[in-house]
Length: 205
Image (cartoon, rainbow, N blue to C red):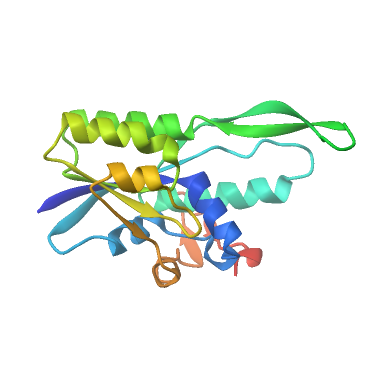
């Protein structure tokens, strides 16, 4: 049996769904999605999900709640979540020169790279399934292939996300279809071990 580990870039996936106006698929079971992409003879051993928790800006309580419930729902399904952080950054309008504070996500690509390399050295997988279209992951993918030529790295591009560099350096690639997203939704209600019930947000239907 060929061992597969999936590495899902939460931000790349989310913005691909958002750009495609696929809000109804936000309640996505990334482990089920990864399993749907396997070939015969392959077994999914683990699914990692990389993101960052939304920072409180005084106006986004509902957004924070939706993300918190979603991350907990993934954990109930056995997905291993790892988090980066947001860095405060000042933006400036080039037209009116107004300035405002914004936040930029940091460390997701670094965390994916470290987990991918660590798992390769620990011989955790035969095939790494990278769900992302972020070209920043080109170097770790290339290094894994150079150091471990017997291992394969397959890139699964979220909707509206593609990278020529990733296509060039991975062993193979595919585009995630809407049918796969539709068939890989979490149950509308999940019960945590402590009995708390997680439900799909009404706006994600």
